[in-house]
Each structure stands twice: as C-alpha cells, then as structure tokens.
Picture 1 (cartoon, one colour):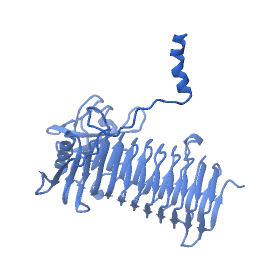
Picture 2 (cartoon, rainbow, N blue to C red; picture 1 turned 135 degrees about the vertical axis):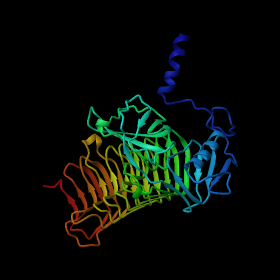
Picture 3 (tube, rainbow, N blue to C red; picture 1 turned 180 degrees about the horizontal axis):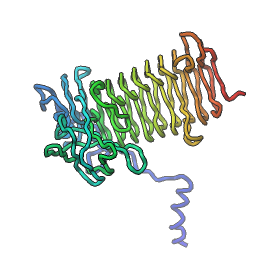
Picture 4 (cartoon, rainbow, N blue to C red; picture 1 turned 60 degrees about the vertical axis):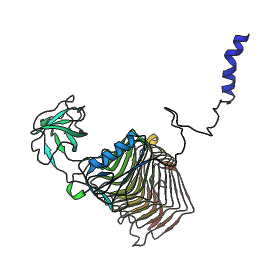
Length: 435
C-alpha cells in the first residue's frame, strides 16, 4: 500500500497543475556555470581607434581583436572611436560583448569586392581552392564560393575565410561540404558581411555607421550576408545603427529569437532593409527608418510573435512591409509606410493554408501613395485567414487610376476591416471574393 502511494502521489500532483518551483533568487552570486548573477556596476570596457586608443588600427582586425579580448574576460564593451575602419572580412560578434561606436563618425566600410573563377576542382572534403586570378585576394579575406550543384541544378553558396596561401592556391578555414568544380561555374568573390554572429547570445551593436560600398561589390541576398548578419542567436540588441549601401540586405537574421532593433536606419540597400527570417521568434523593431531598399521590412519564413511599431518605411522599390510563408501572430502597428513601389503592406501568396500569413494584426498604420496605377495600400493574397486591419489610415494623394485601398484575393478568409479611413482610391476595398 505504501509503495502504491509513493508511486501515484507525484502523478496526482502533476495532474492537478501543482508544479514545484524553486525559490526566487533575491541575492544572486557569481557561481560557476550559472547564468543568473548580480547586475554589476562596472564591466570591462576597452577603446579601439585609429589613434590614441587601447587598441589602435584602421581595419576589421583591430575591431575583432577588441571583441575577442573582451569576450575572453567574460564580456563587456568595445568602444569604437570616431574614424573609418576598412573591412576585408566580417567581425564575429561574441556572447556578452557590446560593440558601441561614437555615432555616425564611426564608419565601418566594406572594401571593394572582386571575383574570379576556380581553375582546379575542389571536392566537398577539400579545404583549398585554386584561383584563376588571385590579384586582390589576401590571407584573412572573407569570401563567398558559388557553383552549380550537379545533382539538382541549384546554386551552392558557401562563406569562407582564406587562411593560408601559396601562389594562387588558398587554404580555407573550413572544409567545403559540397563540390566546387570548374565544369559547374565555380567562382570565388570577396563578399562578406560587416558584422556577423553565429550561435551567440546577449550581444549588442549600437551607435555606429555600417557602409556596404554597394557600387563596388557583388550582390548576394540576405540569406548569407548583410551589413549585419546573424544566425541561430538569441537576445541580440541593435540600437542607433545606420546600415547603408549594402549590395544585399541591411540587417538580416536567421533562426534568431528575442532580437531587438531600436532607432536604427537601413537605407539604400539593394535587397531588404530589415529581414527577420527562418523561424525567428519575438522580434521587436521600433523607431527605425527603412528607406530606399527593395523591400523595407521583409518577414521571411515562420516569423512569429513579432512587434513592428513606430517605424517609417519610405520609398522602397517594391513593398514597405512584406509578410508571407507561415509568418503568423505578428503585430504591425503605428508605422508610416510611404511611397512604396508596388504595395504598401503585402501579405504574400504561399503554398496552401498551412503556409499562409494568417492571424496577423495590422493596426493604426498610415499608408500613403502605394504602387503604380494598379497598386494597393494593402494587398492580401493566397489562403490567408484571420487577419485584422483596424484603425489604419490608407491614403492616395495622386490620381485614383485603378488603385485600391485594400485588395482581398478570392481565397482569403476571415479578413476583418474595422475603423479604417480609406481615401483617394478608385476602390476603397476591392474584394475579389465577391462574384
């Protein structure tokens, strides 16, 4: 009987929802391996500058040295003094490290790119490549390798660093993992981000200007690079960052959670201004200006529980905001979406109801002058369901032409329009589900 009670009592407690909890930590101490510790009044800070600093230099290497030094002592701040720092590779951010510039006078500039063919085959297990024209390539450079995949016809793209050299042969920091054969158009280009983070947490970058030198570099999309590019990282903060002129994305992060982007600008980039992607959860973006990009704010795949509030998306070539593949339960609120090239806010066509951008809330935005003569302030495509448009101001100050305030395509369901002010369009609401 006692044995039976011993075995069943815990399950009864769990079923009743009485989960045992540890006491709250009221006096934390620094204990080995414990992430809960005191809030220290002071942590390590070092300065990096072109002169008169703890670390002196003018390129990415001195910035990386500062980041690595501070990370090795448990975290702190790397303060970049005014000046121009020329980057031939990405600076790798580290957990617990804050990189703080001195405002727009701190400029991190990507050096001009370059591209050449591979002249010898490299197999998937190799760690070296042979370049047709190695001029301009140097040990320490960040590169991108591309080739047509012989099995599926797609393109393989890998980012690597050159770590050793003999003539036109270069050793790579990692093996290739795919075949790069001359018969399949294998090329190397000097393409890289300015700052990257991979599997890090609790890092920050702020008060700095990042310039991608777009006119002198090759295009590559934001699944691989950007002024800032993050992967599989948590609790990253970006504040007062100017990300400009990148031949790709301004700021991109993939599979990153609890990212905060505040009071930043992403301007004049070839691809997306801000690109939370690939399952990123609980993004908060506020007080930012996304201007003159292809798309201002691009929700990629599976972005959920995001808050996009009090931002300006202006003069973007296609869309101010684009929401698509399995992007659900997001709030887009109190933004200015101005002069978008095609649609102001676009909910994209996807591959069926389980992939649609459903359960999103679009509230109190001001969307002005969207698209050409057939444009729309808000375009809702595909099998999109349970989207709320509430208290938005949708304006067209040009001729009405064939423009719509809201255009709802025929497969969409449960689209709620409530309290919106819609003026100046040929149709306030073009509901293609009717007739």
